[in-house]
Length: 159
Length: 300
Image (cartoon, rainbow over all chains, first blue to last red; front, side, top):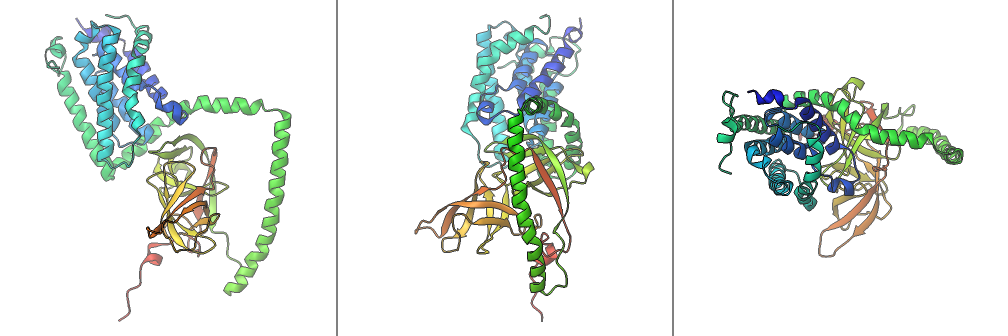
């Protein structure tokens, strides 16, 4: 049986693109601190529920888009998002059977890893300061995960 | 965590390489990209193309706030508009007064310099650009403007507003460009105190309302309220564009350098439009050329 054919490619493309737009939408600084990292959330969701639809290419491309958008070093977010996608895909069978709260914990861990990778690359590429606020992002991601997951589950029929 | 790239991904037989292998490939590509992006070179061309690709998306992302502005503008009351027209009229009268004296001053200056006629304006050409998006965080102070190489904009071109210098072109796309603001923590601008002629460097702080002058010795003549203008020594900006006004000077007897803060004249947070400028070549106020900056070798 070919699972990829039953996976919602259009929903994946659309929601990841939407995540990219939401992530770069200009907001006042205090609001952008608490903005959940939408791309990463979408990538984790599709990594778990449709690991064959976008593969690692779609998340990687979305991360690259984020790099171009934000003027970061090319490949920085691409690598971090691809890493998140890879972990979610590798563990998708286990994660599918977990409750939303358990998944939130997983989201927190991977997002911290994502943030760590970006932070390390920024340090290596010689960016000066960094705000400590960035480390709240995984927390916020974990908090909104149940809602994002419920919303995204409406876009497709879970196999 | 022991299952990475193993059993779970291979459970669908004949589906191509495993997740682990594919991730490895993308990771390698990313690292190569990062490496060459830092080095500059051929990736600049790639970025140029990418910038064009994401431009529609940038416009889309900006559309909600643009729509909101349009709505707000179309529903402004007659009174507000009238007030705005009145204040603009007043401003125009003030500017006309200044311009009236300008012509006289220019010819006077020409006489003093022993020239037969006044010099033409150093800014040869200007182009208005609209701000598409704005990032004013501590890490990065950037603008995206809807003008790019197709409008003749070039890399490291000076960008100003009606009030003063705002930044320079940092990355160039075909239809858009990224401006690094003078307040960006990675930006430094050679300036001169207009009153006393003290040359120094204005460094961005990451806050859109402050510049620092970290290299002024305590005994130099700088006062609160002094106007800073570009010195033209950076090969980018012509001489004499207003930049900032000194707001705070702290002198510690134990330190040889004073701590000076200045406020940029351009209202960075509020600006919707900017001006790209082209300087007249060979004008005395034009940005210094490498030849002009070179120290002459002693004659033998």
